[in-house]
Image (cartoon, rainbow over all chains, first blue to last red; front, side, top):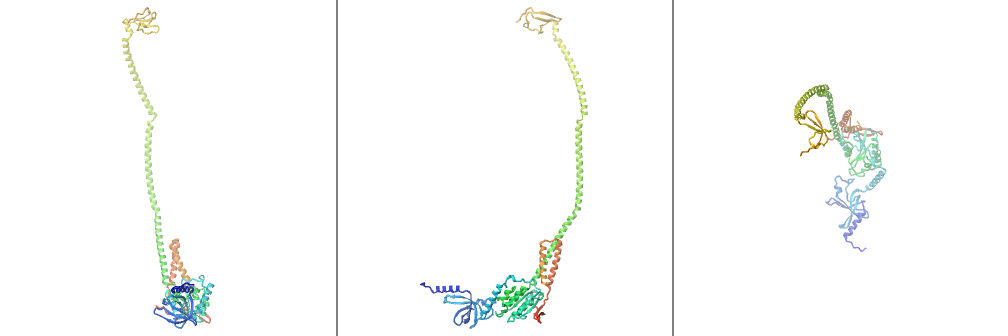
Length: 449
Length: 78
């Protein structure tokens, strides 16, 4: 390998290697060379008989409000500790060190391991399953509290439950919450409470303490007692950051005893409010419904009066109709009568008797007219005959004959001869004279020019 | 009144109000429901109005569980 690295590059590589190569570690050792600069961080060397490593606890975990090492201890020079850390390289100085986030006094390590093992076993068994969790009652009648009968825990629980809902009864099952007797007492208390009437929820509580202090709540015995409980169990053990096996097994985990009391007991004032709201809604609805029904009844009774009114209306309408009918009828009758008269007139007009009379009259008049006409015509004829006779008289050839003229006719046809050419010699002629006629024969013809 | 009774009463009351408001009832039913609702509301109120509670200790006497009044309760710190 002939690559030449700068120091920075080398340290960078080392950093990558170390920081990636080690995950979270649990390390055990003794504290030495402890320094607490003003920054608030804690620097020391962690060592054992053969080796040592630099370590730092940054201020932040301590500064977090409410944060405490589980057992509440402070790291001191010469102290044996178990810590959880990750490995970090500090390139400016080419050093690597542990950055610690959890510190416990030495000896807890075994406890911690036992805890993890028990937890894993019970979890695998299904003891922590959500399906095993029982729901809490809405409003408990009587709460069983398994805890120490003295101290802040029971006082907090009594205060909070009393404040939230003053009429919920409490039955305290006094137990020791630490020490070797504790698990058995807790287990028996849980079992006893199962048979007490009206207990419908149990609070299992303990105040904060070291990991050893909380040990009873990390026992299989207590975990199984909780799991056996038919009554829902709410756990409130140690500080908010502490999780015990009991917490995992309980039906509900509360961060603190006060919180457990709050979870178990509803707020009376809220219930009163809910109830009042419901009553209000119900009353309002009833009033509205009653009003609606009243309105409906009013409208119905309004309509109930209707028939009477309608009867009057019908009566009036009936009268009206009758009037109109009468009027229509009389009108019709009038029209009919007029029509009849008309027809009568027209019929009368066509009365044959009238016509016959007329005809009689006509015939009479015609006859008269005929008579007068005939008479007139007779007179006319008479007159004409008379004048004609006179004229005839004057024109009569016979009268001329008297004056010596004669009329010659060709025989046999009788043609009156005006031209000598109209006859031939020898032809017979008739010559009419004033008195009588001559039968003659044409002897000769003389033609005049 | 037990807890079931209170919770059931409250649930019943809620249901009655819902049903009334949904307008699914006949007048007869509605009146009956209202009466029932008032009864339930009184029942619940009565429970809410109760002020006293018993605080007891569960002890063992001759191996049998017994209860004794708890003397250690500080009267309500108010």
